[in-house]
Amino acid sequence: MKQTTIVQVPVDKSFRDEVTFLAKNMGFSSLQELIRFTLVQIKNQTIVPSLINTSVNLSPRAVIRYDKMVDDVRSGKVIPKSFDNSNDLLKYLNS
Image (cartoon, rainbow, N blue to C red; front, side, top):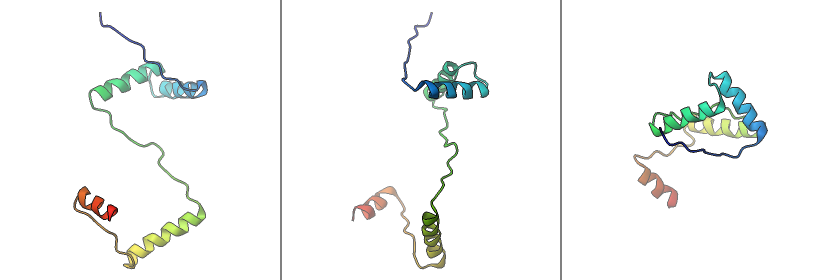
């Protein structure tokens, strides 16, 4: 028989309940099953990190600022820097 252990992760009850509901909607029988599944993926190095809902709502002021940055690059007013490797980037940042 395999030896087992218990892993405890403190979380808010409302968070646990919400994630349990979502895990069941994903087809898992319980939150524990989802956690075991995830741990096996980590062990096997088959987990694929992803960001869910990565949209960001910018303020109107920020939208104007970033649109100007993009326009400056597209028009050639600003030439973006590029680097062949991370060492060159770090040298530039530290200069």
